[in-house]
Length: 137
Ligand SMILES: [Zn+2]
Ligand SMILES: [Zn+2]
Image 1 (cartoon, rainbow, N blue to C red):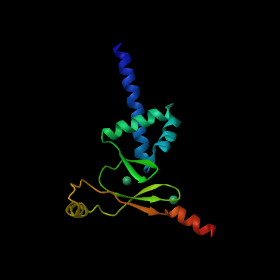
Image 2: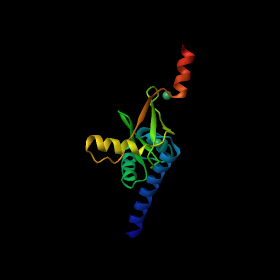
Image 3: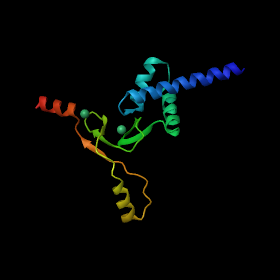
Image 4: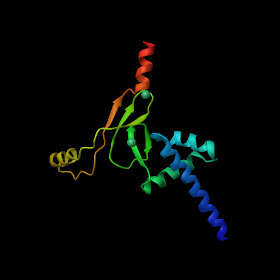
């Protein structure tokens, strides 16, 4: 009986590893994109992929980003950083603009809130979408 339990645990772990691997190799992928990558390698339902994403999030392995109002993207980077969101293709990128803790201090002083952190998303066109726009002009 024990071996059966072990097998279940091992299977669940390897599913989670695959999901984590997809998040690590991808660049801020959405749950759908992660599902597409993972289901190529192993039979998994979208629900299973989504549940594994939630577990990884609870464990602090990945961070959900709310760059796109319609869709969550998942990030392997856990340090505070900002993002660029392309309004055309929907891709999310890291932007090497430093996190400014003084914004938190200022916001706390102005609002009386206890501020934990802030997130900035820059919106616009990525390089690819910009080039495509120029070609079609
Ligand atoms: Zn784009
Ligand atoms: Zn990021």
